[in-house]
Structures are given as C-alpha cells and as structure tokens.
Amino acid sequence: MSSSISPLAQSFTGVSKFASSLQSVLSRAVSIASLPLDSLNAGLTTLQNRQSALQGLEAPFLSLQQSISSLQNTVQTGLLSSSVSDASILTANVQQGALAGSYSIEVQNLGSWSTALSSAGASPVTDPTKQGISADTTLTLQTGSASTVITPGSTTLQGLVQAINTQAGDKVQATLVNVGSSGSPDYRLALRAVNLGSDAIDLTDSSGDLISSSTTGALASYQVAGLGSSITSTSRTVTLAPGLTVNLTGQSPTGQATTIHVANSPAALASAFSSLATSYNAAVDALAQSHGSNAGPLQGESLVQSLSRVLNQLGTYTNGSPAASLANYGITLDQTGHLSVNTATFSAAADANFSGLLSTLGSSGTSGFLKTATDLLAGVEDPVTGSLKTEESTVADSITAQQKRITDEQAVVASLQQNLTAQIAKADSTIASLESQVSYVTGLFAAYNGTSSTSTSNGLSTL
Image (cartoon, rainbow, N blue to C red; front, side):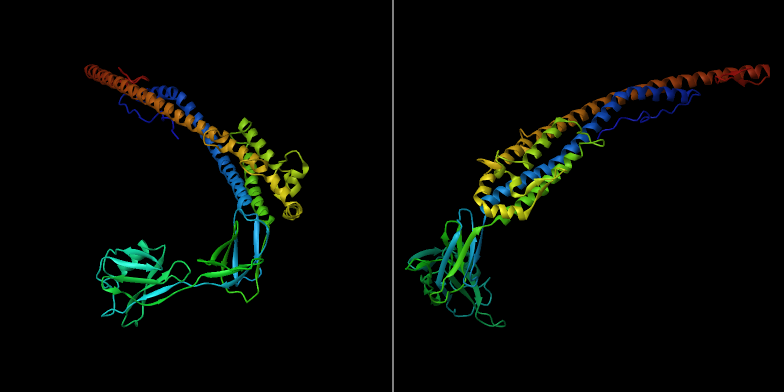
C-alpha cells in the first residue's frame, strides 16, 4: 500500500536566525499540499479492506461449488456398493453404469502365463550392464504365431531387456534373473506373457534359438450361473456386467458359485451431503461477518444480499413438492441458518424411495437440486460473469488505479517540496548574508564610539 510523503521528508537546515521559522513555513506548505494524498491513501485502505473481505468470501463459496461437483460425481459413480460371498475367490468393482442385482460366478481355472528363460552362454553373464547373450543388433521375438523384430540399443543383457519391454511390451514382460549364486552370478533373460494363454514364447538371433526352457500357460475360465458353457479370458479381470468388473483370485470348489450382490448405497450420498453441509455452513459464517453492528466493509451491499439468497435457495431446495425437498431427506436449516444432515432420516428415506431421491437430486446438466445448485454457484464463481468474481476484478482494477493516482500525487508533492526547499534555502542564505553585514557595521560603530552593542528581539544589533 502506498503512503503519503512526510512533510519533513526533505528537512531544511538553515544558517540564519530565521531558519526555524522558514522550516515551519516549508512544513506547513508541504502538509497542505499533502492533504489530497492523505485522502487518496485513505481511499486505498478502504479498497484494500474491501478486497480482503471479498477474498474471505471467495474460499468458502468455491469450496461449496466443489462440494456440489463431488455430490454430482457421487450420483454418477458412487450410488452402488457390492458384497462378495467369498472374497478368496474373487473381488468386485462397481463403476458407472452398473445396475443393482445379484450375480453368481464359478471360477473354474485362474489361468496362467507362458514363460521362457534364456539359455546359458559360453560363459555366465556376471554383469548384465556390460555382457549379453547375443552380439546381434536384430533379434526375433515369437509369441504364439506373432513375430516381433527387436533392435536393442546395445548388446548387453540389460539393453536387451529394455528393448523388449519397449518394443514388445504389449506381448511380453522381460526381466533379469540370477540363476547362479551371489558370489558367482549367472544372469539370464526371463520372459512372461502379458496375457493368459497357451502362446509359447521364443527368442532367436542369427545363431539360432536363445531360449533354454519355455512353459506355455492357459486361459482363465469361469461359468456364470444359468449359463451352461464356460467363458474363457486372457485376463483375470473380467467384465461381468456393464459397470461391474471382477478380479479372479482363487479357483472355486467344483459346482460351488460365488455370489456378488450389488445394491443401492445411500451411505455415499449421505457422506457427500455432510461435506456439502460443512462447506455451506462455512459460507454462512463468512457472510455473517458482513451483517450486524460490527459488520465489515461489505455491510449493506447488494452482493451480500445476493449471496445470502443463493444460500437460502440451496438450503431450502424443493421443486414444488414436499416429497421432493431436501427436508424430506433430513437435510434442513436450523435457526442460525446452518445446514445439517440427519443421516438416520436420510438413510431411511433413501431406502424407502431411492428412485425418488435420485429424481430430487437430478443432475447438473438436466434438472433437480444439482442443476439448481450448479447454476446458482456458477452465477457466483464464473470467472467472467460470476457476481463475486466480477466484484473482485472491479475492486482489483480500482486498487491499481488508486495506486497510480497516489504515485502521481506523490510526485507532485515531492516536486513542490523540492522547489520550496530550494527557494527557502536561497532566502535563508540571503538573510544570513544581511545579518552578517549588520553585525559587521554594528561592530564598526561600536568600535568607533567605544560602546557595546545590544541585540534586539529581531536578531539585529543596536548601539
């Protein structure tokens, strides 16, 4: 924040007996000239206090907007929960698009991956960063019926591993394994297929086969209740239904299926509403600082009234029907205007009419509470048209303009002070010269008459 120039920023030091009087004249002149600057600084302080108050509203309203987005995300992805009768056989993951219901699956085979190990060289590879298993710069990797040309950046074993993972990483995963001892290492190339299945793995160079042992894998297989035939998969993660994937972790006892139960879960929504209430109440408390006898710089402004109406519309939302109001689900305002969520009432109402709850919530792009809340808060937080953002931008521009006016006024006062100081210094010098002359002449008269001089109140000497 800019400050006004002190009247004595450039002090005057005179030599005449009138120096202190001249200094007083300079100080008074600069003080009078600084009055507009003092007013400008007071105006800047008012603007900065206003800016701080607006920033104090920004954080809670932005948090409230983010809470609405989180609620929207919960409606889209977190309304269902799953339970599995035997977690040692499989785990389930519910995503957007899943439907409530029960599913049964019998895991017949977890499947396995094909593997391969490189042959021993003429001498063991003790340092894979310097030694390799082939001097060729082009090798051929075979996975089932598919061939991939591998071109390592170096002939070292480590360079070969990196080349395979980069150039054929969608088919196999390469790594190093020491089949020797710690004292006498023997590093080999180990390969494993990315997908389950029986595709054999082989690696050749110009001299022939580089693989000493190869083991073929098998596809995973499972059976869905009601379906007589088995389903095979190249992965242990399978899609059982839209939005429902399962990870196969164990093989089922013969003829024994594992049940997955997918159900509506109001708990996730209750948690999202609790977070929303926390953000809402923070916004209420921030606005309260602009009301009452000790209100801040935003007291009585239309923006405060507008933001209060936004909060009231959110806290008392209804689409016209009591059954479609937030209060029907235990989400109410208390006497202080704070939002509370009665989780027991919410869960009971949601369990009784889950579809009604979803209809009340709607979505941010269509209808319901989420649409209303999204639009209201966009009207507050939109970077271009939002009421709070616009006001913050206006105040910031006003502060910049005020600081420019202060800088300009400071320059005017400084120039005045400099000019006056020069003029007064010149006058003081002239007065001092005259005083010196008077003193000299007075001394002559005194010497001539043989009398002493006395000083008058004006600093002159008399006989």
